Length: 113
Image 1: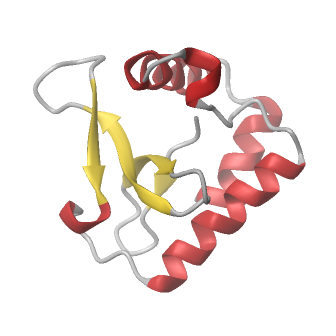
Image 2: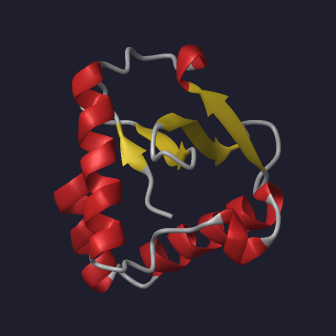
């Protein structure tokens, strides 16, 4: 539930979405037309180039977060559906940003910024 930021543009791409093999599939982000509604953007539809180096970086971040048992890692098994997972991820991210972030904010800056 930490948004990945493009190293090229500095803009957030969204919450990375992985398959069971921990391969990045794309990003969930808030819809441009409906506030609070998530939408999936596959890697092939990103407005910026997502290189193999970017894939490796985001995969390393996931592995580190899993090893550290970060509260920022969300699984569909915990929420029952993609919609619930994305809703909770967006609320988590919004709550962290409103609270100033603490440790999770440091993770964001170290791993995703």
